[in-house]
Image 1 (spheres, one colour):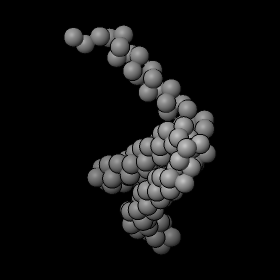
Image 2 (cartoon, rainbow, N blue to C red; image 1 turned 180 degrees about the vertical axis):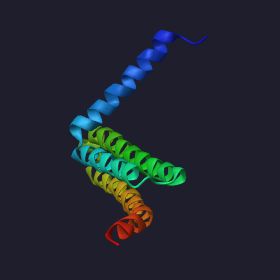
Image 3 (cartoon, rainbow, N blue to C red; image 1 turned 180 degrees about the horizontal axis):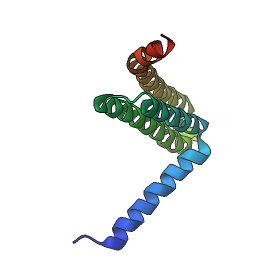
Length: 122
C-alpha cells in the first residue's frame, strides 16, 4: 500500500540531496546559472517547442551527470584510505563523463541558438 508519509519523506530526502549538491559543488551552481540564461534565451528567441524540449533534456542530462559525479565522489572518498589510486581514476572518469555531456550540450545548443543570433545581427 502507498504511504503518503513515506512518499513525502522520500521527496524531502531528494530535496536534501539536491541541496547538498547545490551547496557543495561549484560546477552545479554554474550549470544552474547557465541553464537559467539558456531558458531565458529560449523565451527571448521564441524557440520551437521541440527546440525547448531538446534544451530541457540537455540541461537535465548535464545536471544529472553532475549529481552522479558528486555521489560517486562522496562514495569514493569513503574508500580513499584503502584504494586511493583507483579512487582518483574513478573520479577522473566521472569528471570526463560530465565534461563530454556538457560539451555535447554546448554544441547542440550552438546549433539551436546560432541561427537566432545571426538573424539578430542582420
